[in-house]
Structures are given as C-alpha cells and as structure tokens.
Length: 497
Image (tube, rainbow, N blue to C red; front, side, top):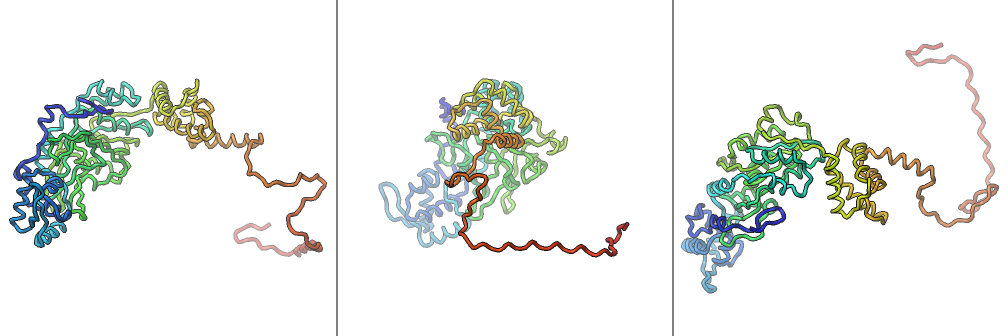
C-alpha cells in the first residue's frame, strides 16, 4: 500500500474496499425520509431549470435507479413536465405547480447538494473507524521525523496517545508545543470516511469541510458518493474558539446546520492551542466536554429543541504556555490524565535544530557561531534554549546578507547583527554602538548640494537673501527701574521673616 510523505496510505487494501459503503439502490436503503429526497430533487430542478435524470443523479449523489423512481413520483404529482428523451435519459422541467412548490421549499432550506447520511449510519461509521492507533517507538519516531525531540518526550507522548481522555501539553513559549500536537495525528495511518452531511429529523447538518478535511488523492469508484474518503482530521483551534463553535450552528440564509468543531474532528485530533486565552473560560470549556470525554458521547440540539447524540471519538489536546495553576484547580486537572511538560532544549538539541534550519535556508555555519548564538540567546533572550530561535535567526540573517550583498554565512558577527534586530533588550547594545560610531565619525548624512569652497575664518558668511538697504540699529531697551522698597506679602500659610 503506497504512502504519502506523512505516512498515510495512498489507496485502500482489498479488505478495506470490501467494507466501503456502496451506493444505495433503493430509496429505503438511503435511510432518510422520502419527503426530504423529493425536496432535494425539486430544489435542484428549480436551480438547474431544464434538467435530466442523469444530472439530478450526479448532483444529489444518488443512483440512477433511485433518481428514476423519484422523477416518476414527482411526475405523478404533476410537479414535473416531461419534455423528451436524450438516448435513455429523461429531459424535464418543473410545472408551474412544481415551481411554486419548489420555491416554498427553498424558503425553508436552500440546500440542493448531495443527499445526507442518516445520523444512525453516521454514528455506526464513526464507531467502526474509532480503533486506537498502533503506537510504538518506531511509529512515534516516524511521526516526529522532521522535528528534534528527546527520548523523554517520546516515552511520555506514546502512552498518552494510547490512553483514553484528553492530553495536556504545557511549557514556556516557543518550545514547540503546537508543532508536537499537530504531528500526533501521523500515528494514525488509515484514512477515514467523512459524510458530506447528515440528516436529523429531516434537518441537514453539514459535516465535510474542504478547509478541514483532506480527501485522499484517489476516491474509490465503488464508494457511495455521499461519503468522502479523507485523511484523519486534525483541527487546531486557538484564541478564536468560542462556545458557539462547540454546538450546532444554524445558518438562516441556507437553512442548514453546521456541525460543531468536535464533530468535524471525529476519528481524529482536536488541538486547543493557547488554552486559557479563549473568550470562554477554561472551566466552562472543560465543563462542556466533561461528559463527552468520559462517556465518548456528545449531545447536540436543533434550534426547536430536538436533542440527539453523536459519538465523541476525538483525541483532545490542550496546549498552553500559561501557568497551569492559573487555569484550574486540582479537580480540574484530575479530569485530564495525561499532562506532559514541553520544556526548553539542551545544547546538543539546539545545535541540531540550528543545523537543520541553516541547511534548509542554504546558510553555512562558521566555527564557533553555534556556541555564540547559544550564549546570546541565554543573555538576551529567554534565559534558556528554545527550538523556535534557530529558524528565526536564519530568516533574519538571509535578509541581512541580501541587504549587504554578502555570502550566506552565520558567524559571530552575523549572530550579533541578528540579535540587535531580534531581541528587544538589545536596544541598549544598539545605543552603545551608535555612540561609539558617532565618536568615530562613522555616520551617514544626506547628500548636500554643491557649494563654494569653504571661506576663511576671517570672511563673513554669505547670505542667500537678496541685498537690501542697511537698516539703522535699534537701540537696546533701557533696563527697568528697580521696585521701590516696601512691605512684602507672603502667601497664606507661610512664615514671613
């Protein structure tokens, strides 16, 4: 089975293909109300105008057998008018009665895409695809092959992935918590099926989102087109996460519901980045998911009160650079069993990250430059070594070298130049250098216009103003007379001598 650069399968095995949901051959096999199928066909026909059985079949993602049956039923209801045939395909349009009926249905819901999957079929599929990943040291090393990670981190992350419940990554800024969290999904190598939408009480809930879900390159031809074969979803939500994103969102313009973020992440990973900086408090966020994290079931509600349950098969990863003590009490953290510190890195790990970053940027590292960069980082930076810095240094150094038309070499001087730009506390260093440069006469001034040779010390300066008659000098004002002696008045509350 071929794999892509992330280790995902490029195609399914024969056994997996045998288990794929096939295109239903009858309305009963669709598992959704017949009236909903009629509404979809009527709205689609209204949007397309003159259409055909084949076009409606492709547009709604249902078989020709079902579509032909639906067209016959709508024709018997005098909602469709048969115009003729092209080969074996019926060509038709809506009758006037059909247009009125379609417009009425459009006023309630504008959706006319693929037919939905029943909520029962969706739940069964999520549970079937919810097998835990096969996590070993080798698979973890492959997942983090493009990062420099310690053996300690591998030993802690592996069991945390296999343990049910959420994971909590904490540590100072810039230690790579988000990068670590995003790569955890690579331990899952099997793709999953994601429905385009599901049906609940004849309402449509969209699930598949092309901005979140990544379809595999080759979709199986025998797959029910209402499903999309995707790589395991991995969603990262930061400070923009709100309480509304964790519940169904009704779109009044389209008349459909949007699935909450945890439902879109089912069978995958959900990273809550910058935990503690959301508009919703950490306690409220965790309380919303206490039951789902414990029972693996979530409860959602439609706007008119219908409540239903869906599987909660999501690995939730909280990531923060805040002090854990500020996020919750002991009871709060008891609900998160796996708590992993992502700390600063060692000298050897820092040098390894620098080597990789420099190689990717085409930069040559001069002898002693890595030692000097570590020293500068500890003195002017965070006081320790963090893996974000080498990449930033290389990025700034490339700009400095380009500006000076210099070779891409990181030496001690280059480290100092980057530090003067990057670290905010390097302002004192820049001020000292500016004073030294000014004393040495090394400064740049705007180009002046050509002028006459400098005059001798005895010559008077030349004026650019036109010559005028000499004006008499104004007499200097006489000094004001001294005040006559007399009694003085002190401000109230003062002692007068």
